[in-house]
Length: 624
Image (cartoon, one colour):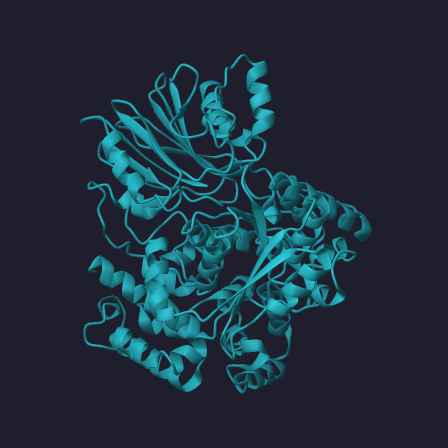
C-alpha cells in the first residue's frame, strides 16, 4: 500500500517540488519511503509502505531508459508472471517488485491493455516522455482510491482528496448535489465528491491526459451480470458449484499471501472471515495471527466469543482487543481520513481494529466481499420480499404495514425502522425498496431537510439499475450493490481506516476469478427465501462449526440510537441545534431540530444523526 500523487501542466516551472508537497498529505499511507519522477511538464510521486521487494522497491521507479516512470498504490498479484513475460520480450528489470512491471507495460501497450494485464488491487500512474502522456488506472472493483481535478492548463491527481486539494490551484467549492445524495446513502456516489470539479476515477477505468488537453477516460472492465452481454447462467449442480467456490477461494487466498512482511487476518466470527481463516490454516505452517475487536458497552455487539471459537478450532494465534470508543473524539479523526462526510459509523470500530492490528502485522486478510458476491445482506431478501407484499391484496398490505408500525425501534435486532421504511411507501418497485432499506435518512425526513428538487443523484442511481434490465431480480440487486455500496462505502471505509495506520488489507472474496464465477451461478444457489450465501456455506461446511455456519448476520455496529438519545444527547444538540450550526445554512433549520427531537422520542435515527454530525463538522472545517 502507498499513496500516489502527481501534476501535469502546459506551462510553468517543473512541478516536482509541488508534488512533494502533495505527498506530505499521504505520508500515513506510506511511511517507509518517498520519491518523485519529475519532468518539465509533469511529475508523479509515491509514498511507500514496503510490503514486497524491501531492498530495491523504493520510488521513483522507471523503465530501463527512464522514459516511462511509474507510481503504484496497491499490489499486483501476478507481477512475477508479468516480469517473466517482459524479460522474454527483451525488457531489462532492475528491481524485484511489482511497480516496475507497470512502467514496462506502458512502454508497449495502450492504456486499457496495461490495466487488463494487472491482477490485483491498484491505482497506478505512468508518465511517458515519448508520448508526452500521463496514464492513470484503477482496479476493477475500486479497492484503491484515485481522485483528480482538471482545470485550465493543469491536471492534479492523488490517492486521497487531501492530496488533490493541497494544490493551490484546486478550488474548494461545495458540489450542489452532494448533500442530498449523502443524506440518502451516507456517501456521494462515484465519480462525484463533495468538492465541485474534483472527481473519483471509476473502478475498471483508465484515464489519459497530455499537457493542456482534456482527460480521456476509457473503461476496460465491467462486472458481469448473468443473462446479459453473453454471460450465461452456469449449468452446474449444487455440489459442483460449492467445490468450485472452495477451489477459487483457496487460490484467491494463496495469491494474497504474497508478502515480505508478516501477514495476519481479521476474524469476526462471521462466515466470511471465518472461512478465510479456516482455509488459511490449511495453507500455512504454524499458527495464524488473527485479530478481533470487542466493546465495553452493555448494548454494543460483541463478536469475540464467536471469533474465539473459530480461532481455537484452527489453532490461530488469536488476539482480542477490547475498547470503549469515544465517538465525540473519533469522529474528527474519521473526517480527516475520509476528507469528506462519510455516514457509515462502522468506520469507527474499523479504525480501532486497524490501529491495534498494525502493532502486530503489516498485512491483514479480511472477509469483505463475501456478502457482495454471495448475497449475504438482509437488504437483498427485503427488496425481493417487497415484491410479494406489493402483489398482496390491499387489506393484507395494510395489515402488514400497520403491524410493522407498532414495532419498537429495537425490535427485529434493531431492524424495525428499516422494515417500517420498506413498507411505508407503496409501489416503489424493487429499486425503491432497496434504497428504502439501505438509506440513512428516511425519504420523508430527507424531503423535509432538503428541497425535493435536489434529487439529481437519483437519476444516476436509476441509470445503474436500468443497465441490468433483463437479468434476474437478485442478479440486478447484486450488480447495483457492487457498483454503489461496495465502491463508495465498504471499500473506502476499509482503505482509509487501514491506511490511517499503514496497514494493508487484502480481500480474497473480491478476487476477480471468484467474482466472475459467482456472478454466473443460479440465483437460488446464493439466496433462497431467508437463506443467504447458501453455496458459500456448503463450500466450507467441513471447516467450520455448525454454530458459525448457521449464525445470523450481524453488522459491525455501534449503539448509536442509545448514545445519541442519552450519553451524547448534549453533544448532538450543541452541534446540530445551536444558532451557529452550519447545517442550517444548507438544510431546513426547523426540520433538523425536529429530526433530533424525534430521535429523542423514538431512538430510531441513530445512523441519520451520525451522518448529520459528520456533515456539520465537515461544513465547519470548510467554512461553508
